[in-house]
Image (cartoon, rainbow, N blue to C red):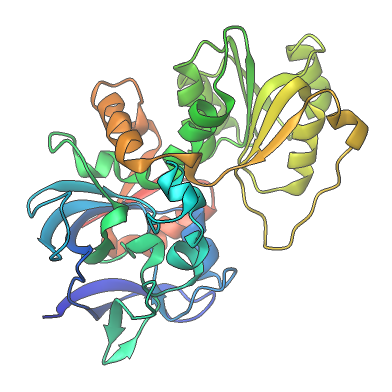
Length: 368
């Protein structure tokens, strides 16, 4: 039996989100119906809504959902109706990377999460007046009051933690945290630089503050964000609009360069500056995604002292173990995620988009 629900539909590239009634298919064997309580808004949603990704429109986006399970498919074993869940990306579970604990590098990640708009078998999860819509975004399409969610997108979480306080864990926060914990793994005395103090960058700052790194440098062009970065654990900040990044980082690192850098801006010029600012054997983690096809020039001889440049999707995290641990840290106040969040009623999604685009809100969370 299908479920009718209200969703924010993007009709075509660049169109606003419009609230409209849609039908969700019956849960398949490995799917669950989730009542969405809160969902974060992420730049990836805006990229797809603008037409910048080949996601089929009209469609329903949203990929930082959190809610309560209402019904489960016949083969679902991990959750039961009534469970609180954070929704994250999906994966096939069968390929070498999924089997090896790296589901963010699933062989079918792009079509399953970002650009396919349908289930792996080609069937549609969302329709309107009998016409299929783009859906299955990150296995969830959570810009809706109800979502049909892939089993591998579901992460059962502590029901005592308010869902609106942990919705962003599904994408932005685990990306920033995973860049630091899963890739950089700072050692005692390391210098970590975070380029861009948006939701992902500030998550990286908070994560770095929970490591033995002794210098944590946040870089942005917005003064308020740099002040917040300091409150969240940055030891130094650099306003890239006022200071020369290369010179300032050289001074702050005593000419050694940075041991670890997280690039969240998606700006290839900033990426190049990051690569040039690495210490010998340092690592640059590339998180920000510029338009498809973007390239960057690198100084090859500059890389020879053991420098690494590593691309990253979703923190390279195994969600079933990673997200519940983050929820515990939020609950204990050690990951002060509430400092990033501004909540909006679901009907105000376009205002949330405007505030995020204008830099007024770091991590909008829509509540239902």
